[in-house]
Length: 427
Image (tube, rainbow, N blue to C red; front, side):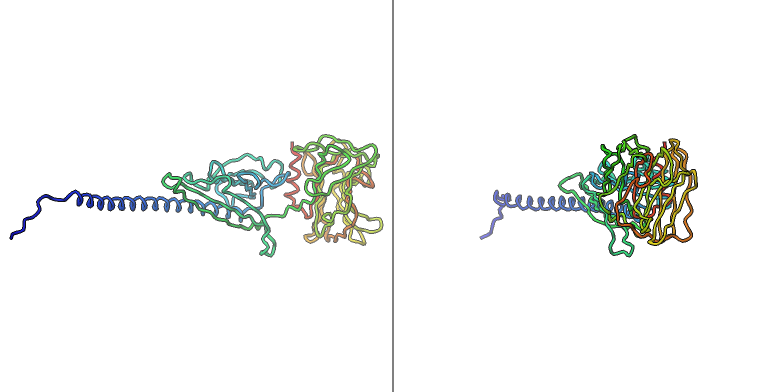
């Protein structure tokens, strides 16, 4: 018998099976295309985020390594790691390591987050790091270290400082933590990110060395607080010390001492950090109201029998004197005579001692006039033998006049740092 072919085509069941298979294939192809597209977009975003992060961190590390130190003014560091976003402020003496005139004649740079981008701002013409109002200098050029297509939120940037214990000289280090994110193909669900932490050594950073700072802004004149450490002063005398307007800009008050009232201020004990090794600096603003021999500004010494400690005082002839004792004798360096006068003028005075470097100098600067006298160091600088007694401001031969902004450092300040302190008196 001859077979007859079925000319009716697909049955309904066969058509359903066929369509299902085709649908599965098409769905698989579409899913594969979407997956590949998303993977490509996210991979591209990851590459962009990583590239931005690497450039930003590398630039930040470059600036840290080549800076001449942290940017500061008379009130302290211009960096602020506690705010959100944090601010890293670096000082450069010139433009050797920076583009254009970023820090012409010396200046600072600040790194922070602005509108979700890492921003570098230049502050030129800060001739001496630490000078008055350096933190509020006028900005010039700005540079963005990350592109507009990526995001850096405030809490994605972090700075910390420490001492590099692995280095022979215990250099300061700054650790930067940075996270950069980027939505891939504008889809938040496909956000890419790149995060890293890097530490750079600041080989040029000079330790601050500020032991105590008496601003004399206290509401009572029976005591003066130490804004750096706990070395508060007790003050007495009859009649009492009076509070007067500050001698310098950026400060509130000062203490007016009367020599005939035995006015003095002193620590309650012998502060260990006031007993120095090879160097120290004493600096203050003064306005003498009369001059007589041995009017002591600072005294932590006993030369009558022990020959120990150090002193800073003014003589009747207007000479600023700095003295150290070595246990058997004393050594004094003095400004020019008549460098200081009791005519209402305001002066910045400083004693700088560095036995190792052979520096022992007395600096006198007259407000609105400029440098008046800096003594020449002796050919050989004596060793200092400390006197284990209290630290005094105006004692013995009492100072007659106003004292303000008294600073004590455990190292010798460089000339540039002395000039920076003097800038607070600029009108």
